[in-house]
Image (cartoon, rainbow, N blue to C red; front, side):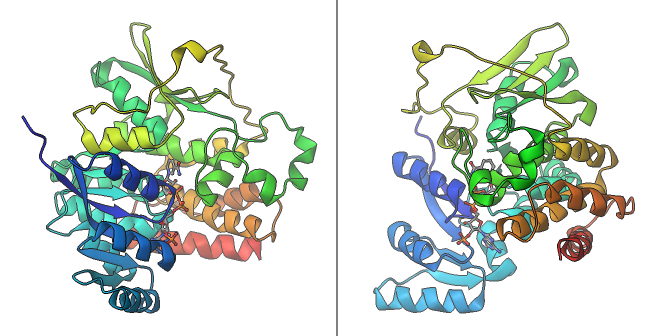
Length: 388
Ligand SMILES: NC(=O)c1ccc[n+]([C@@H]2O[C@H](COP(=O)([O-])OP(=O)(O)OC[C@H]3O[C@@H](n4cnc5c(N)ncnc54)[C@H](OP(=O)(O)O)[C@@H]3O)[C@@H](O)[C@H]2O)c1
């Protein structure tokens, strides 16, 4: 039987995940098409994508950028594309009646409202934007259950866990093991951490990704966000999610079952594979993303160093408390990473800022997206004052 065409709304289309998603659409034109694209500030790329893919809607971050894109499309003789902007624009994209599937790949909480709206509109979501699951996972997963909407993880670790979970029952799961490359500073002496530059931190040993996630990988806060994401996606407590440092990034994660069996997922370090899995689920289309097993020589695993990477401890603490603490963890990190990239604070001030914001955050469990965004703003205000 022929697989029906899936029309995609891609949120964050100009980013690393967005572009990889479009390359999957390019490779599988009989399976996937583009209905809507949401970008931020990169008008050149959004214009090129609009011309190539002819979506029904394109969204940009601001009214000014949107009107710039509209006039460029007019001048190029491209008609029939609605150009929208801002949070409302991202929601127009994610709830478009013509879209069958939403790829959530905007970085940070800017993608939260559109992702929530997609779930409320009954659209299956391929989730790359871990920050929105960290900030509002309790609300998003409850809405997904209520509307019977699948949230399919694109994050490679959670995608691997999703695959390993297909062979066992929830009650049979003992531990979810998230693998971590350890980032570029796995073996750097601790007394040199203060001198780490943005250029050094932006060099990830195994993955090419956006700037924030690359710095988060260097501090291992990224793994911390993934611990919280795993708890929410797979409905397990933090004590059931553990991290193992695996520098080769060959095994993308593992699930240990109560009988002692451990299932691992191995594939190339290429985000197109988890994206294809999420888009095509429950099918597995044949692809060229093959892994050369014969070239595999060794697999190393070591426990994470909590002293070197205090962000991991902070994430476990936030995961235990949930609610406002998870929101604050993500928001404070985003502010601190930006300040580090602008050379306003040293690398080691990233965990210090997060720790201080968490210490001043009262325990609370927001129940609406508006409450989440208010808690997010408050954490950003505190972090902003600290980095200033
Ligand atoms: N890259 C990876 O391998 C990877 C792996 C796992 C998970 N993730 C997650 O996937 C998400 C995206 O990561 P990425 O690496 O693709 O990041 P990225 O390359 O920095 O791309 C971010 C995307 O978000 C858009 N954006 C930013 N602010 C926006 C706003 N206010 N409104 C609308 N769009 C906005 C950007 O648009 P402009 O560029 O046009 O401004 C861009 O399209 C993150 O949550 C990340 O943690 C990424």
